[in-house]
Image (cartoon, rainbow, N blue to C red):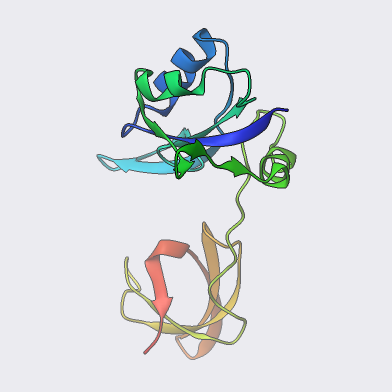
Length: 167
């Protein structure tokens, strides 16, 4: 009977390990997500493993040559419990796959760390060191604050990384 097992790879070699394992006839699953990468004042969106250095391989321990996985280029080792690989509950892989979008990427929605009415401090930009009241946000990208400027309340939209909880 086939079950999913976890392979620990060498740093940054998840895709290479996956390719070599597939060439050996194994069924491999590497869940991926989109990640923002900042470099030289530019922001790129790249595909990256959901679990860096880990991937899943489907094996039948009674028939598959699972010892060969540890010798595969890009693989550090197959996760074991004692001397035998430790199976992952099937619901885990099914749940991850169910969260994939049409492009095969797992969508991650991080909850917004602030609640409506929280006092927030602006840490970057022209309004740095000002405080405002958190109104809403989309979790990771943008937040809306109410600031008292020039004697009236104004809504200001800012990158989420340009604010922090006050205090």
